[in-house]
Length: 460
Image (cartoon, rainbow, N blue to C red; front, top):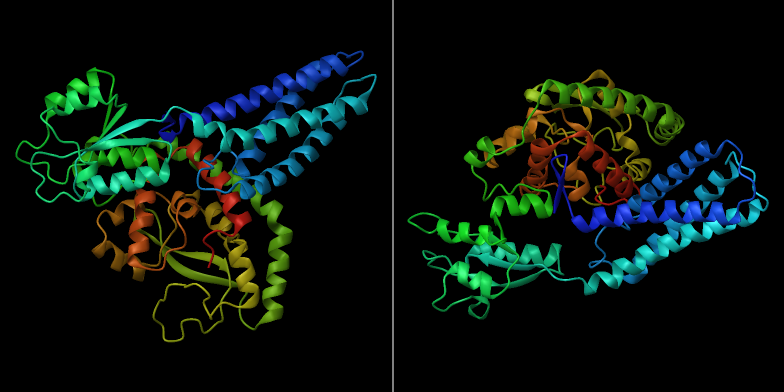
């Protein structure tokens, strides 16, 4: 894992992105040199446009999910994603080369060659994701512990990174009730450091259920680290691998003395400027959609076009969020707040469409302009639920230390939640965002939000 502006990225993801962008640039430059006739003095401007094409390729591949791990995706799904990327990429390539300020002896051949190059880059990405990735050297992981925490780490690792190999579980000295099968436990007379070296371990994840009374062999863990073996505690492991902070294993000391959770003035100003600029652009672009949505809502049923509701924002201040009305006007006729559920009967026909496409969220851009919300942040919740969740879920109030967002890390990583358990799961992603938020992470979330909108993932 590589940390970029406080956000963890897989090293292989960064390598893929840089390789694809570099390959596209080199191939396009070669096409222009081989196929081109006489180039005029506008070549530097052409280089800028070709660079823009390479960046456009990165955006298209990202939105199509081609840089995500394909181990949990079928080949058919990857091919469908590649087909979508190919259509967008070829259209972009054709347009860019039609606008190049250069004169070629055979412009048609240059354009066809460039489109062929782009096609090869995308096909190669699917091939690499499904075949060559299976043959890469696996990461050998030893889990220190054999209780419930170790069992959870093992299950998570197998699901999130099937290509990593768990060499075994080394029981802690004070763990009385091991949960891991005996066949997977490492026994014998060897110490932790000797076992790790003998098995050629790359990483050790400390996942002890019991850490008191000398359970943590600090000297041996230090020896492992000095020998080049990476050592992580369970909280840092989940932060790196899944982009979440597990509330069942974190403690206040880790939150206080660790890095992150910085809300400096410079960061706040940059985020505010970004919010204003993006919300103005998005309002201008989506204005026709919002007008048509308002007309459709008015034609389908009586009642207001917009739905205003109290939500809890930064520093627990209450404000009124604005959304397009997607439910009947008597959705909460008894006055008691109710979470939306799957196939909710209160949702209108137009409401069902705008909720799946997230169009109902667009009026919140005006809340962003007013400074009540941010473009990216934890989703604002209703005061009734906040009071309940704060009492039942530890550290829930931490999410109110920054402005709520139209979209957020929890929204792109977890489906819609309608229970206390769902809220606890989403809080773990919200804590990660509050701890590590930056403009870079905001861009990552916005990219992933586009994919969520296109697939209708998690909508209700």
